[in-house]
Image 1 (cartoon, rainbow, N blue to C red):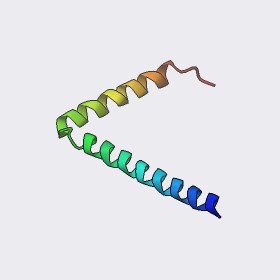
Image 2 (image 1 turned 30 degrees about the horizontal axis):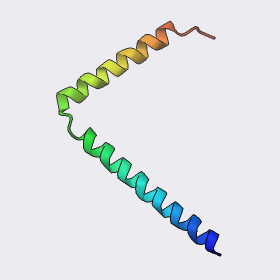
Image 3 (image 1 turned 120 degrees about the vertical axis):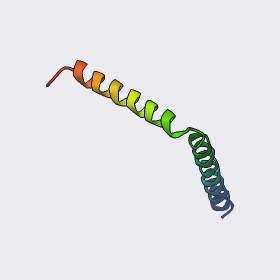
Image 4 (image 1 turned 180 degrees about the vertical axis):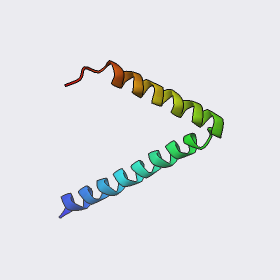
Length: 58
């Protein structure tokens, strides 16, 4: 019975740690302003298009 309690506690702690990491990531993401986000998205899109153009066709 004690093992199940420890396993449950470990699961709860993992959930809390995951929530904290997601919240921190969201705070970092919200520090970008709109023009900076647009520039980053355009850069990622250009990289994806270039990667697709150089990929061998099957």
